[in-house]
Length: 106
Ligand SMILES: [Cu+2]
Image 1: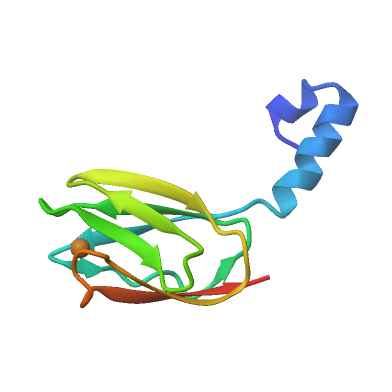
Image 2 (image 1 turned 120 degrees about the vertical axis):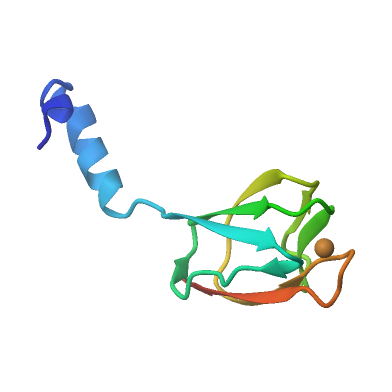
């Protein structure tokens, strides 16, 4: 237990301890030079992906199955929480040659 948790009322400290065990991870996928960086190999439902567009062009991160569609103006970020398991191919609506794939475990 860290010092902050010790100072919390016990029920809250227990809640914090149990919820942090299965805490979601946050990952960044960067677009630079008209390419998506490789997404992490191990993704789970509940994880967060921050899509970061470092280009001077507008891009999107769009799922082929339409489960997400993130608009990314130049030099911007978009956050999304992964809501379902499975393999999802994604692409950029403005540059269809830009593609990638998420593999999400339950
Ligand atoms: Cu694009």
